[in-house]
Length: 108
Image (cartoon, rainbow, N blue to C red; front, side, top):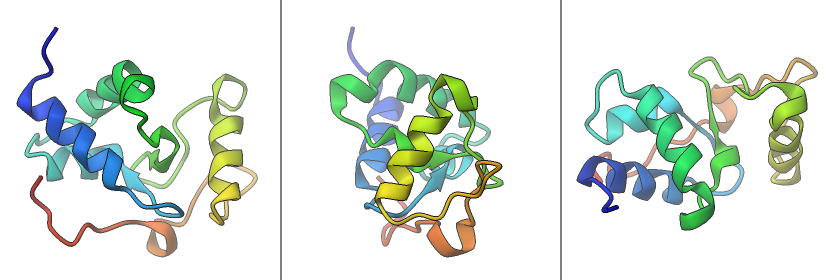
């Protein structure tokens, strides 16, 4: 099945998130030109992360929280982020003012 242009933009944006930086589902959707498309970003992550080698662990909720439950991938995500130098609190929260990523070019 071919990948839509909007999904290709989402993949490109996620691929560009640098080590130790994070972006939210809603930010990625906005940069991809999909207003209110946070769920679309989640679907692309779910279906394409392995195939495209996406750094899925660098995508969090708009409030900086890890979206996955602790025992269903959240713990793994927190560990991966910590290994990149990101501080993750006990309640699985990250300060996006410190670790948030802003691409130099906001059109992909």
